[in-house]
Image (cartoon, rainbow, N blue to C red; front, side, top):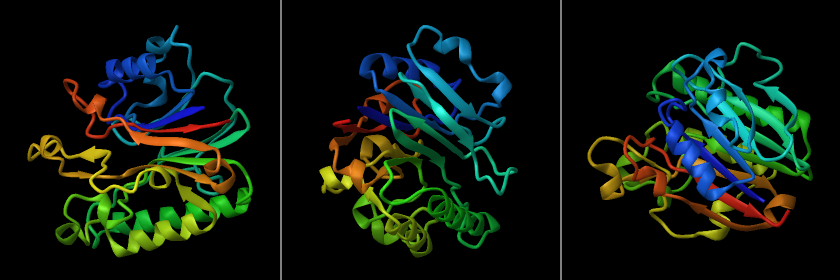
Length: 255
């Protein structure tokens, strides 16, 4: 089973990129973030004949998440049940016996801002969501743009970037608390190398200079991590004309 996660930075702007990637790589599941399209305008017609079923939750110009699957998508839920006014940042679904939680975590703006505090609270609610609804022994795949580079090797300049909202001690603690419930970083199971990134700013010729961040992740509970056979970052979509500033991360499982 092949699962991808891709922050597309506007699905409609990146339609040809997404459709081309699906056609070439044929993942069983693709989780997409930052679709930036309200539900009524979701480009459903573009995916007719693609072989993929899909569910989505979006907003105009901001946020938005979607799941594409070759198999049936069951038991779909959006957001946190106790906060229905949440932004479009979470979809939960079940596919082939796996619970998939696709998230687009708030970026945080600057550490002194209310938006950063919202990011920390969002992680706290996410942790509570997992504890309330699941057990660590369940088969869970948690993916998405988490807007956190967990380790020093996950950013191009850890000394100067320390304190940024995506590389800050407080968010590292917030992520660790969720991970300690029972998640494994599948990419780091298979790759220990530094300078492996999923995001590069459009400015400063960052992609060509590899001034990147590993912000996009595939986490699983241990039962599924034990079935993982590979996890890698596909830079190909970052080379195309008018790319997203992110690129897909992919995991494969013997499932």
